[in-house]
Length: 223
Ligand SMILES: [Zn+2]
Ligand SMILES: [Zn+2]
Image (cartoon, rainbow, N blue to C red; front, side, top):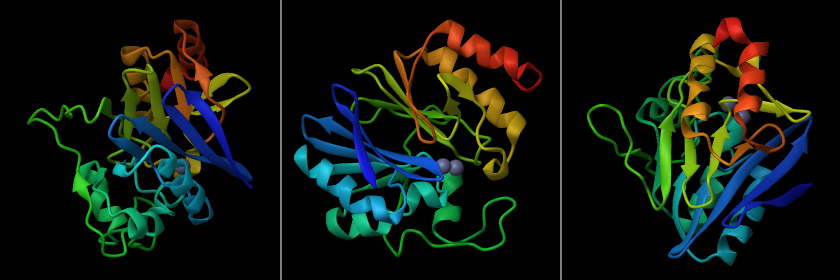
């Protein structure tokens, strides 16, 4: 069953439990709505319905191209035809050009719709988009990106981390391309120091220095 939770004033989380929890987000903006990740296909109609409450979908941002994040993309795009942004390194994996590291088969999740690279400068710093700052957090996947909503002070982590019992956990090992790199990317959490962490696979967490330190201590050798 698909469920909806309020993350903050302008952000809602659409989630579904199939063994693990899978989440996607809808952000309310003065010009309409923004979808962040598209979950698996059964979640797509609900994501669209929630987005429609805030007005026309202005853009779709993707944290990365794993199937549980882009499974609803083609369905949603068919209805809204909004610009889709993802880190340039992820593009060949979602257009079916090549398989993810350690995967056998490439898959085209875009079904012919175009995807754009997140705009940034030559040093790889992304431009802020409609009040959302993308942060390059590679490791779980080569071009993994987290999104920080400035006004609500929420960091949407995607799969950079997981959470369990009120604690931060590392990304899911079996789906993580480079765990050392993924662990280094978690420093973004401390750098941004948001009010809240909204996590795809797990419950959301109030950020504190202690929360992050506890995670580092537990997995120290890897951060
Ligand atoms: Zn993933
Ligand atoms: Zn995932």
